[in-house]
Every structure is written in C-alpha cells, then in structure tokens.
Image (cartoon, rainbow, N blue to C red; front, side, top):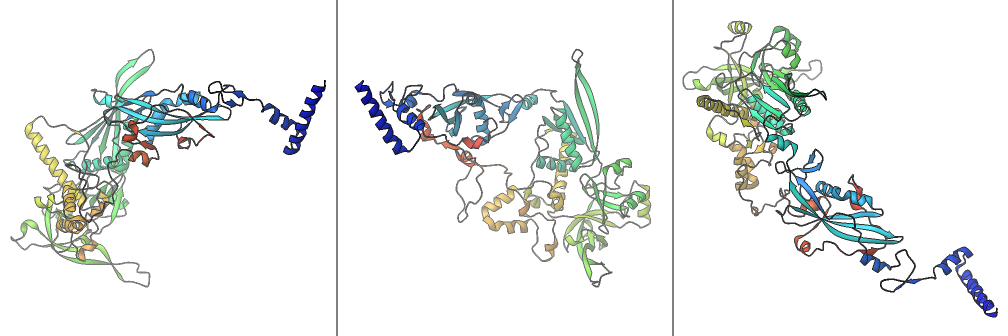
Length: 620
C-alpha cells in the first residue's frame, strides 16, 4: 500500500511540473506525454522509433519499398513509316517531333492508368534519356512520389523504355490500294493554257488545302484530286469557292449495299468548272452588263481572278467586279484570249503624264497626277523597218519609261468573232493598241536564269498522252505556260501577295558570293532600275518579298560562316536535347545516360513536390 501511494505521489508531482511548464490542458498533456512516451524497436535495424503499422523506421522503409510497383517499365509506340506520324488512339494519328512535348504526352499516356489506380502517387518529373538514333527505342526517366504512411513520403526515379514499331496509318494504306478513294474532285477549265491551274496550285500550297488527299493527277485541261472521305472533298471544294469563281456538279455511284443493315457504299464525283476567263484576257461586255457595273467601258481587260472576276478599263483605269452567279447566267467569251500568238511586243518611245481635275468644289483646284499616261509605242518587229508609231492611253502608264518593253494587243488589224466588237473596230471606236503589262525579265534566256525568285510545285502524277508527238507538244506548251505565268507574277504585286515566293538558286549563290551587298547587284542585274523614275514602279519583285525556305540541289552542310558575317538566324536543324529544352523538358545526355540506373532506391523527402508541367496534360 505504501509503495502504491509513493508511485501515485511521483506521478502527481510529475504531472504538476509538466502542466505548469506547458500551460496546457490535461487532455493535451496526457496524449503528448504518456502516449508518445511509448516507443518500439525497428524490426530491421533495431532503432527505437514511434509505433507505426509497418513497425519499421523511415530509412529501412525507404530501402525496402518500391514506389513504382504496379507500373509498367516497357511500352510500345506505333509510328507510320510513310508520313512519320504517331498512333494516338483508335483511328487517330498525330504528327510530333522527337523530344517534343507532344511526344512526351503520348508516352506518359501509356502509363497514366497505372498512376491513376494507385492512391497518393504523384508524378513530379519526366525527362528524355539519350538513345541511339537507329535503335527504335525511346526512354523516359520518371520521378514519382508516394505517401506510404502518414507523414512518410518517398521519392523514386526509374526509366521507362518505349519500343517503336512500324505501322501504316489509314491514309498511307489507302495510297497503296487502287480504287480506295471515296470522293473525287475534278477541276476543269475550258481554255488552251494552264496558267490558272499554276496560280491555283500556289494557293493550294500556301493554305495547305491538299492535306488528306490520296493522290493528285494533272491533265492538259485540269486536275483530279482523290480523297478518302466525302467531308474532306467538301472542305476542299469550299476552299476552291473562296479563291476562284466556280460551279459544282455532284454525282454518286453505288459500289455495294447491305440489305440487312440498310448500309450502302457510294463513290462521289464532283465536277468543278472554273470560269473560262484568265488574267489579261480582253473582253467586250454586253451593254446591259456594262451599265450595271458602274457604266464602265465595254472594252475591258481581266485584271485578276479570285472569288470574283475583276475587270479594268485599259484606257481610263476604272475597275469593276463581276460575281460568278452573274457570269454563269450569261457567259461571256473573250474576244482575245491571252496567248503568245495573240500579243505583240512594243517598245515605249515616250510618255506624257495625264492630269485630272479633282475636288473642284473645294478651294484647292490643283491638278493631281494619276496612274494614267499617254504612251508613244512602236512595235518591236517594226523597229528599223518603218517609222510607224502609236499613241494610246494606258492604265499602267505610271510604270513605263522610255526604252521599256511591254506587251499588248494590236486591234487595228484584228478579227473578232463577236459581231458587236467587230462593228466597233470597223467604225474606229476601239483603240489601235491595248497595253497589257510591262516586261521585267525580257525574253532572253540569260534574263530567265537571273530570275531571283522560284516557286514550289505540288507532287502530282502527270498523265501523258499516248501519242509521243502529242506528249512532246504538251510538254512544250506546259513550259511555255509556266514562263508566261512567271512573267505575270513579275508584273503583279497583288498576285504575289497571295502566294509564297522563294529565293532562286541564282539569288542564293549570289548572296553567298557577295554577302549582304549582293541585294543591290541582283536587282540591277534583274532589270530593276535605281533612278527617280523607277521609284514609282511598285510592281517589280523585291528581295524583301522572298522567303529562304526553298533550297534546290542541297549540297553538304557547311558549318563555317563567311568572314565578318555573324549568324543571327535560328538553326534549321535541332541537335540532341535542343528541342526538349525548348519545350521545357529535361534531357539526359549520352555520357550520363550510359551510367544511369534503370531503377533507383527510394529516398525520404519531407513533403510533396510540384506536379510535372502543372498538370498541363489532359490525362494527368
């Protein structure tokens, strides 16, 4: 009894001292002092620890636990060898570069289910690991954190290997099968040249509207586009409606049907017909149409073709636009279609400016200079034979100066198939000559080689004629049409703004040889004058309009730069780790990757870290 009293007295004394020291309640003191005072020994190392469900200290728990348990360390990725796209899900293929953020998202999606299934498991870091370029392997080092028990957080890093397998996507499979298309778009224009299709080809390349097309075939009078789906063909037709005036006819053919499920398989054919008018064609409008278009002159030139037909009066410069619906209701045929056999070359002998009185109601009645000019021209063929000269107004007179060469229509001795136009010519109501445009590069082969721009072309299948003579003639006509189209581009700045022009081989070589001072030399060699009269010429091609992306006949890469010329441009080729650092993702170099452990030992950390990429990936 005395021993019990002594023991209670010791407990009461200890309680009073601790209570006064901590100034807490009896409840907090009881759990703090008496419950936590009980400790056990670690079952592995024998260290005195507080009790826990594992009866193990934190260090032993970290050395024996595996945070990555249940997660796969190997996965398979499928890549299409043809288009280099990666398989994302069923029927979906995405294009992404090596070490990019998109490819990392695709790799992490393969193991995201294992991360979601485990509670208190968090991905805090992911880095690319260097692999051999031709090993068909991708490696990603993942860092995971997991709370194994209350207050104990472990972190572990391990490497996941992805095996790359080749598999064709649906589009590439369809390219190797005959008759796999579902919708065909036949683009046709009933003219004798292909200048409109060359212009349409540049628009398609700039906007990328041919993506998803299985194959493209070209003919003398048109092009065929094969699509695997009907909606892709409809999207392509919608693009054509926005750039050229067309009308569409659609038909379908039954391929097969399933009576039980009431499912039919059709092939669709879309005939797209472009208006039979081209740039620089000469028209003689009906009187009613001319009155509806602002009472414009009946003799007009086709200034350009877009979703509307743009017309210009060659004598006054007045413009008008005809919608395609109005054209198809009453089609207009040109009295002269632009062709080399129908146009002539003229030399400008003199120019007189034309001043117009404008804003006569205001106090200032000064005369203003317009783009019109009175040109004195002579036929290039008649120089040295006779002294016949012609004077006529021109809407592009501001571009001309003495000595320039231009092309135009000579209407004095022409014969028209339109009766009204023929009567107007016979009565003298029409001018003797109509100037179409200025020639910048001339017609010599030397100036053709000095052209400072080049165009990209579509990858098409050319359908040649069966007869070799006809095929050879078509090839010559195609080359002639391409040269005419390049001359159109040279003389029309608005037309060039709708397509991508690249520096030609001549411009690249000259720039490498002479450095930055070659720009002025190339413009002088190309025929661009530097005097005061040429400052008003805003239609000529300038080096500022050209892009550097198209490289023809690429040789070996050169690492040395010209002397005194710093490299301010961004490199076109990204080396190992550059793309990863650009996207904010870590990259383990080759030397470090060789000594990297596939799975590291878990370590104890005080608290959870920041999640990888702030959960920017949807699957996280």
